[in-house]
Image (cartoon, helix red, strand yellow):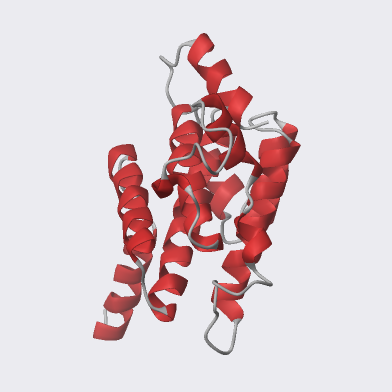
Length: 205
């Protein structure tokens, strides 16, 4: 095998390497903390791409919890094979399927559509993106964050600790993912108490 072929094989191996749940949750927390302190435009874009990659994987865990435990079949569904791309391979498709399975409701479905718009902007914009722009500010208004603040007793901006106020659409996205990703990953657990599942589901309406 040539050095180039070995490098391509290593890229494929890295793409298929999945950190454990604890690492994923820790990574999202680190990204939120870094974003809260302030990062440059390029770091913001890379942060979004990494965070959304973890979200896409977490969606596959939640959706896959409804299927029979067949690793080959799951891989075909999410990643595809030599014949075609994964049937549930796209971020767009995973969001629709997760909502259709009642993993979350229409409000969270729309929140994830906003995240998809942010991801697409970061992936495809030809120039730097100013996420502090007034025109982009409405993207920071995630329904699930408001639901979490209400559930915790933080009803208004005056009552909400400063750290919980989104600094930008990207910061708001990361705040949401700090809670949405663990919720999605919990679907892979066979020991998840139903009452706790229902408490989480009420947030992600």
